[in-house]
Length: 572
Image (cartoon, rainbow, N blue to C red):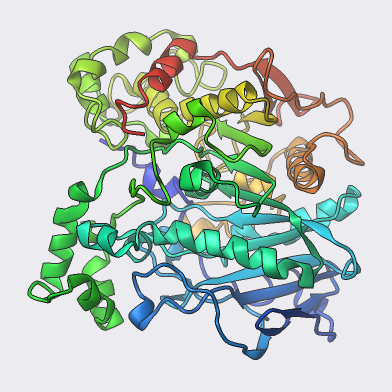
């Protein structure tokens, strides 16, 4: 009964591969001068864009290729020099299984990052924003044209707060999150998250060679990428390794959006993978999987439940439920931006729910509530009443008497409210409250603008803020042939203005931890309040003159508080 939008919207839809150099600008916009940077292992040469006056270093290795004996192992630092490395095109994206991968080259050899810097600042030390892409940890990559960093870097220069943009790849699906007793015993758990961690250590050692300041790194992501930021904030029980000074989470949080399963829960799936690949009788089944031909292993995973591994509590990288860590202050205490979209629930809520009994059954059996149990789930309908003001989409977007198709279910808008809260919105509120309680700056937002191509019945659903944050007003990566259009098509100038405001606010925060004080900020827009007394969100809305306004963070207070109070019952 999971929403049919969820698979498409968790990381977006499928798109054609980018062609060089149109991912960044006109083909005639590339100069002949090749920028270079001397890193610990050699010299990296990139390409200069005269159109944007930026230098691109694309496909820079930050780890040894995780192939052969390094498959299903923690990432290994590069331990040799490589002379000169041409970083002029994106590397293949990590192997995944979903719509975001269609049209892109994939490979096991995928642990690369990209650096986009404004030209002319080579001898300065600029703040750095590190993008971690979403896609449910099962798909996606840095080559996705929707994640074009040139526009936010360009905006940072225009507002007088120049930054460097970096995007990092990490292993996905079973390749990055295989779990079992054998895996835990070998110490190779949550390796996709460890990939991210190693990339951040690599940046500490090498970003200065590109003109970046290693003491001013902000990690930033959306959906599973935002969840990844949360995992880095709480990794090793909140140990601060000094590898970032701030975090930005768009529709994702330090507290997992799913329930954690332990390795015992994943063991049957691991055993099935071992059996289907004829590794059953190997003394070391994990080693057997490591040395299978790529095609055999990938074919076993593609389109099957065998590709559904996700992060686990391992007592190491993920030591405890993050809800306990936040309550006890065991997280890296750096400023954050944390937000969600108004109608997250139309992507994650169920369809086909017609009765309260079905609502209870869904609440106790979906992926976030599998451990909740009926003894708790029976209370949820009372916390999510059918009052119109609590529905998703809300009555400001969709009339209370709107009738969905019967297939949606009689309780669709009501259960969508719970579905969005339990996956994204409750933990956004909980994280901001935890930051405020420990005296750490937090900026909370609600994105409330429906882009082109989505009807009011879907509303401001998951992923829709991405085009605005990246100031992607040309709609790169949005393709009508794949069911999407440029989010700004036939929209008013206020949509363009909102994209500029949001992108510049993100750049401003990356630059100096303040999303407000920059040149050219939209006239009349109130400052984004720090979360604390009054617990206010900023609302980004292209349909109001100021583009933003502050609101008390009190909507669906009872239901959201119930979810937060029962975090341990949700196993997170």
